[in-house]
Length: 117
Length: 108
Figure 1 (cartoon, rainbow over the protein chains, first blue to last red):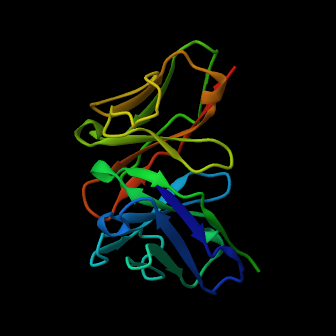
Figure 2: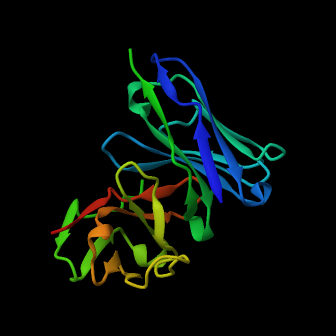
């Protein structure tokens, strides 16, 4: 199992970024996936969930209405569109595969998003 | 929202046993998972579903969960176990997967 995130960078507050997570080594289209973020020097925060076929999506209250999770199973890729970024969104964003009972069994290495003026 | 509370730090000498707690209301009724994170690395699952170990995780790592406290126990602690450890659970609705604040394990 391999998960590789990309798309992070330094952006001005109020702008957008699309993060990607390329999956390999497993049948991507049969697994639920999540995004989890970690602010510098701080702990982990769950951000978003998407069902295996993309029909169900759920978000943390802190990002609801600004972030959109999606997936393209034909490309084995997970996405996170992050709109209206603010300083509090500065974090390393990990994609993670859903394991049993709400756990995360595999994680990518993360991509850093910095929202700063 | 549901809160999981971990001690900020735990220190233990090599060869001794480390116990890291995760407190939450009636946490024993839920499944708790534990992750190890070393500096600059992604989290690694060390325990899932309270007490199950993924393949490749040493038997020195074990978990328990009852009442209001879940516990990660590491026996015969080694220098390589030094890391941050996070507990996590699924609250039960599809909106909430909660993490504890993390515990820094220091091997003296």
